[in-house]
Image 1 (tube, rainbow, N blue to C red):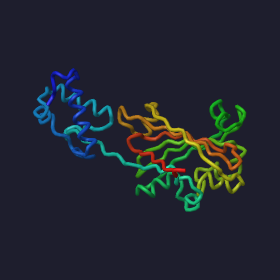
Image 2: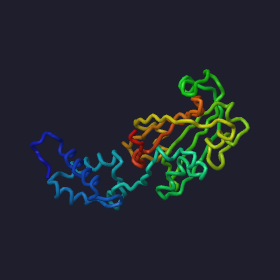
Image 3: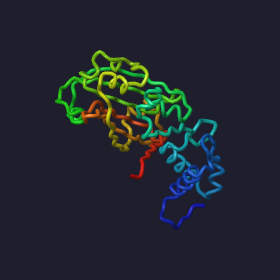
Image 4: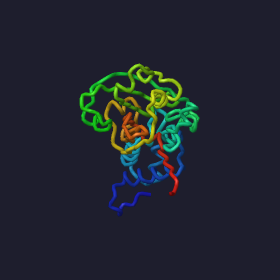
Length: 253
């Protein structure tokens, strides 16, 4: 029931209670929320208040409204991104590195569309790759899908001198991916560094990822270093925040 003395607008109180019930699993993904009339009775609130509360949850990406059917808790795939094991040499040898590792763990069918292009290095990329601005860069621009739904955008950039004449410049890089091809050319990988952030999506990102209004994205910038410490690749990823869980594990030593 709405507390008229709390100082919090009534629609926010209703939205907060419904949000808590969704988070706790009382309304599971795919469930239909009680009708507007039922919510009016439950919260002793007006119809405009209920509509404003539901609209708030819709803009947060928690629910979807289907004309003539009602309001439903949004069902989204859950992908666990295991950062420690997904880039291992052993995983690459089994062709289960990176996104394929996520697919294997979560049981979804992965697919990727890739665009290859070449461009001069701008200031930021030059800094990450420790090259001069204007150096020719190979760009692998990918949209990654889980069961057909776009869940991640990833743009990898490497110095062209490392990729020329290799499958890295093809859409299909072959078993083990880009990192396996680099090691075949003698560029043994030594370490990775990832920088994680969050923000609201740009319009084209929201469109490609089919994000509901109000859903943010997680950003991951990964730099791959050779065994001698030379940067080999910078990969800038944009992940749908409502579809991903980032998991990090490391020994206590």
